[in-house]
Length: 372
Ligand code: ATP
Ligand code: MN
Ligand code: MN
Image: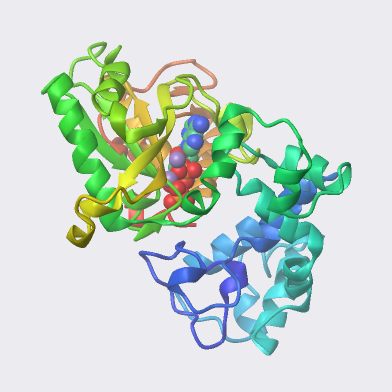
């Protein structure tokens, strides 16, 4: 359970769907607010404060037992066990929620004008906290109407973000994802029948909805995946609103909370897909009713596939922690491309995720258990 989720009545661990957010749970908080607020503020130590909240919430979410009182928090890492100001802060909020069912501090954040506006602005495709902060502090902007009205210059991506704001902020449902998966699979097959397509991201972890759909594309023979993305996009041309830049623009798209070292060099496409509602609802047959959906396509060479699979399954926090563990405990640098020893510079090839866990001397965790 995430830190902000702990409601006395519903503290049991859910393995799947644990990070689905408020729409599938009747909790007061989605779980990301305290971390998010720190990143929105972006002041000194913001990253460290955000990380402390994420770690505290990840601890609670992964905890196998129900947490009902202060005593239960005592031995939890990043909350009761660690004696730091940040852990103390996590514990204080957790205890507030345990006794009151909500936290005054979090309520204040949620109801505050800064958080509300930042949430709105960073919800625009292509807008990160930095631009959003500038709009809020320097230009005095508060609402989406202000964005439209102030005559500020937007990039092409950002103007698409405004145009499709509501669609892109409506979660993609599993059934919609499945429909798109079939279409991409078909396009891959038409381009080359040996291409493989693999679901990653939140849907691979078992979530029933997501902010986008992430797919890895590969070919069993190294090198033969090259140049295929353009052809796949060409096949699906009529279904795309936007096909991103082929190179990595994730700095903008990931809202800035991604250190550059976690970015990879795969050929990829952060697209906006035109999902025709009639594909799922035959009552709409013939009507041009569609919604904009974010689709990420990442092309990976066969020998890096296992690493890309691990790196793109997430969560972001899981990736951050497993990489930190690899580096500090094992002296191994782990990325979505591979891993190598810091000392000997030796590379470790791997065919499966299981092998990577094994090499790191970690117990294997299935995707549904990476929901921290
Ligand atoms: P959601 O369901 O909301 O989309 P998600 O876990 O799928 O959640 P994404 O932002 O789609 O979140 O990212 C999926 C995973 O891919 C992340 O956990 C991250 O580890 C990895 N990832 C995302 N963007 C990049 C990038 N530019 N470079 C490398 N890895 C990335
Ligand atoms: Mn995703
Ligand atoms: Mn994505």
